Length: 299
Ligand code: CA
Ligand code: ZN
Image (cartoon, rainbow, N blue to C red; front, side, top):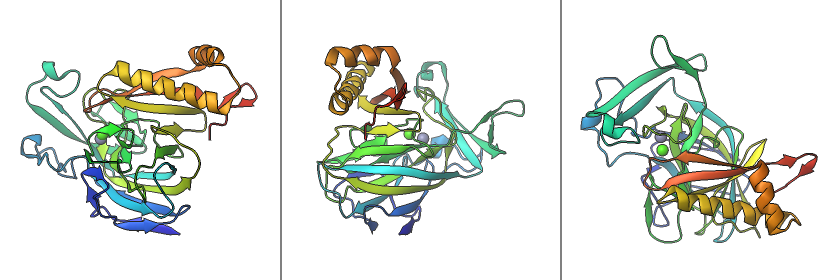
């Protein structure tokens, strides 16, 4: 089945208390319409961040209840398609992001998107890299604001989460309670200024439940690589978790010793920063799906 979920069905937190707006079965697809991270409050350069309702940021469309999903399962999210609007917003300001101490006041600018490129100034344009900023499931307990990343996903701001990628999320509650939003027309690793090119749009995902596999943090797979994703208050802590998660995957899926795993990861793996501007920082550790002719087959 293919379902459709409109942007009127949104949440500002991931929680098991959120009422599902759609119920699907494992294997179904959903076309999910999304607002941008400012809940579409900035439409022109006259709309100012000063008057923005900050209680309405980072909306995720959902939650979707997946019948077969039980705590301890894995939710496999295949991103079939990302369509984005023809204009986006970039924003930053004083005390926002890594350069915030060099900035005065708040800054937001509407950018047009044309012929596969973001028009930054009349002289400067750059190619699209459509991706999903917020994507996740309900945590075991409590309520996690949709601006915060974690083991449940959330505001991961990881540029690998784009078209044709597969995201694996741990399931903590019955039905998983999946949601997504905060599309970016483009974003660089780090998201150092606090925004990507924030854009509304539509994402088509296939939702599948995997039984008998347990993961503790999100994992993203592209045609070329598989990456463990970890978030923590500091980059150092996030690095430790992402690296240990990858070592654990290799231990489970190969007959390599821990010494061979450590040296192989050191020789061909990549540790990369996803974002440094959300309440927790996010990094990823990626390994190629194939080494020589050998398929590492994580999933
Ligand atoms: Ca974000
Ligand atoms: Zn965003």
